[in-house]
Image (cartoon, rainbow, N blue to C red; front, side, top):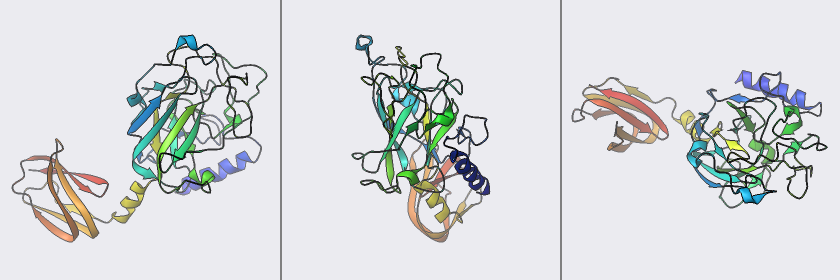
Length: 314
């Protein structure tokens, strides 16, 4: 925890100089590696609405690269492209809560630190009211960025896609905790909306300050627009449940006759075999002995609340 506290102090000092966190590999970056152990779980379902390959030339049709499933689970370089103004609503196995530091992170697939395709980020507790993170861009709009775009991460804040592939852009619910129609300790949905980076106000989109956002435009390909790799959750009710039952014990493992489960409080306990068939369920408190002599030899999963433990019956 002390490392994360130091991290946020450095980030806050850096932002006092009228810039934002820099690119991956630079001092003060807020980028989070896909391999970080702080991620609790990943988005597991979504609804996708594709946008145009080029909103200024709609005869090209909609973006089509990737499948919605490619934006689910952990980052794996499989991506789904949104197209201009395309959007996706993602849901999760457990609710996101407003914890210490960033609460979730969004992964795009940019191949370097300077060619960035951006997206607005919104969250919802009920699936009806979505609250947008207040994005800011300080990128020049004098010249339209294209396929050779060179962008500076220190001029981008609260937009997904700020970092290259393999590194997530973090979002902190604390920023929007006072928003109406949102419970920051019960966030069920994350919506991502592609930024149309045209500096032409007829087609372009604006940040929370009313500034046009300049990112690569047009990108008239099936892979047009924001490319989603994954959304990972850092702070959630899942973690709280782990804290609640962290003192439970299961032994012996491997086991042949009697499995002992010791829980400090009453919890729902279920056991499944390796193919997912339900074998046992009951409420348990304290030290309980389970006769498993009728179990076939093999691998089983003991589920206590949202924690799953493997046991081997021999």
